[in-house]
Image (cartoon, rainbow, N blue to C red; front, top):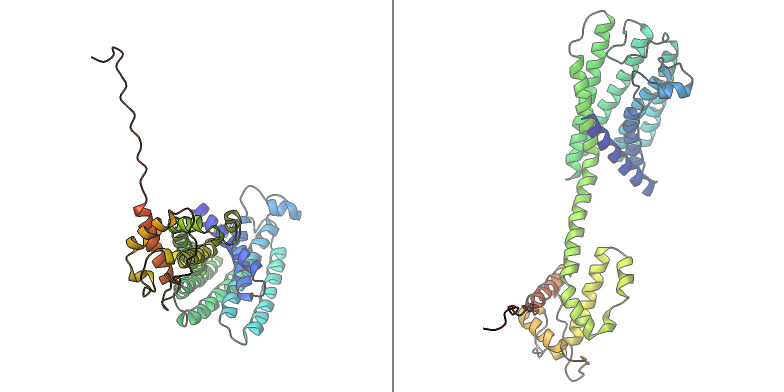
Length: 388
């Protein structure tokens, strides 16, 4: 479960960092990239019980881990601040920048307090995990209570700002915002439960609800990460489906395109290899549509169609396909100045999609009428004894 969650956070963080690099002037996108990077760093720098990588690099003795613990909880505070800044900037309020600066000063104060409290803690007091820490020690209680209170406040503010934006948003952004709002609210409740558990343990009493708070933190974190990633993932999925439809249409037009370009080789704007290297499938499909339309206009005088015909929809595709194949069977299809060309693929104001639909119907009719290659059957072998 942890590996799945860590992999999800890694993919989401990498995705948002790439988007932030592409749009360096977008403060909201930059804030959410920092938030996901901190989430990734929190779990990447988690202090194990038998090794202290961060502590050794910082000069601490191996079972101490004080510096590593401070680094991890500083990342927690920075993650919460970045999440709140994302929704502050996304709300498009005039006071967003001023509020972000004020919250940044609060964050700096919290970070400084964490360092001071950790320095004042007895040696080895922060080595144990949160569940096993001795809350009767004032520095230890102050360390965990400080980060818990700050994170609870930040998550509550984030949930409130997110709900404001979600009410005025449209799908799919609204669904992702409500998920993020629910995740931030869950984290705020979990932080309040942790504070209550720490206070109860500091007074010498058990806190049986502490495991439930840990479960809420995990569920809230996953929900929050999914919420902030859902809109972009859905948009990408829609773009992928559109790309696949364009690719299929591009391939479906191939019979019509090949027939016309054999008759008029000068229809092709650039060599096929250059067309494949330049641009994506949307541009290639548009080029192929233009080449097919130009070819139909040039070959239309040889199709023996009435002059009143103005679009492919007025003639059955099978009829046009048969006459196209017959006209292109000549050695060379020359322009006929005695009969004006017809703009067969004109959509008559219906748009580009109607043009594409007519061309696809004609290409499918050509594919259906293509002569199938019959495989010659081998002659039966004579028997060794010869004919009877």
